[in-house]
Amino acid sequence: MGLTDTIVAGRAGSTELSGVAIGASISNPLFFSISGIMFALTPIIAHLYGGKKISEITLKMREVIWIGLGIGIFLTGGYIGAASFVKLTSIDSSIIEVTSGYLKALAFGACSIILFTALRCFSEGLTQTKPVFFVAFFGMLLNIPADIILVNGLFGFPELGGVGCGYATSFISTLMLIGMVIVIMLQKI
Image (cartoon, rainbow, N blue to C red; front, side, top):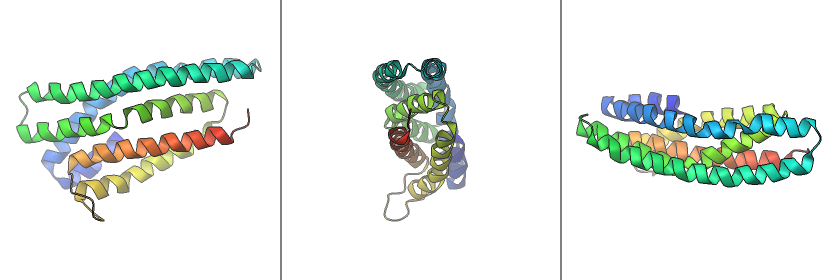
C-alpha cells in the first residue's frame, strides 16, 4: 500500500510526497524484516495439513497469533522509534514532520498487518490462496479512496496531507485483518 500512499501524496504536493516516500522507505524494510517470521508459517501449516494433523494446525495457529501480537507490538515500537529517529536527520523540517506523522499513523495498524500476514500464511498453507488474493487486492483498492479522503479532507474528515496516507493504510490493514478472520472462519479444513 506504500505505492498508493506515495502516488496520492504526490498529488498533494512535493513536501507530502517526500515525507511519505521517506516514511515508506523506512516502514517497508521494518515490516518485511519483522514479518519474515510470519512467512515461515506457510510451509509449517502445509506440512501439517498434508499429514492430516488438523489438531496440531489449530495449536500452531494459536501460538502464531500470540507471536504475531508480540511482533506487532515490536513493529509498533519500531515505527514510533523511527518517527523519533528521523527527526535527528538534516532533512527539511516540513518533510520530517510528514515522515514522522506518517510513521506514527502506520503504528496504529502495525498489529493488524502482522496478524493479517499470519492469517494469510495460514490460509496459504491450507492451499486457500484465492481468498487471500481477493482480501489483499480489495484492501489495496480500498486504500486508494481512503488515502484521497484523508489526504484532501473530503466528506467532513480533516485534511491530513501525507499523514492521512498512514492513517488510511492502518485502517485498511485492520479491515483486511477482519476480512481474513471471516475467510478463515468460513474455511473448511
